[in-house]
Length: 177
Image (cartoon, rainbow, N blue to C red):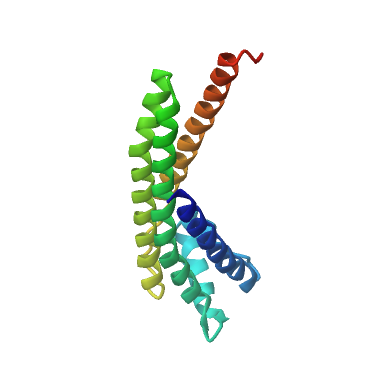
């Protein structure tokens, strides 16, 4: 199951990367999806307007942004499941109560990160739909920041736990640390 999920994740990363690269190359400003996710209203409107006016494969770059956002829904499901699976697996190995508790918290935080990504995507789709509206724009900045902060925290807890488990295993087998 894990291998299949990792393979799907890799395929999705390649697709999202190709789309992102096409967006960056498509305009002289080299705008990226990541920039849109963190953009304020003025910058976000400018980016969306530029993408809407730039032809790409018989459509516009804005259509590519929309496609990228739809693909990201699959990506977020896969990475959320992987975060949960790997946190749970590491939790089963971790004997330190504090680290085990943090790994248990990771299960909840992974769901919150995934839900934050869902909210971010809906905000982006809303903004894409309202590109011609000069007043309406919702920034996904805070939702995006929350998502990345949670993912960073989860990865940090994993790293500490993996190192801790390795040190304990070395000590158990009599190897110097």
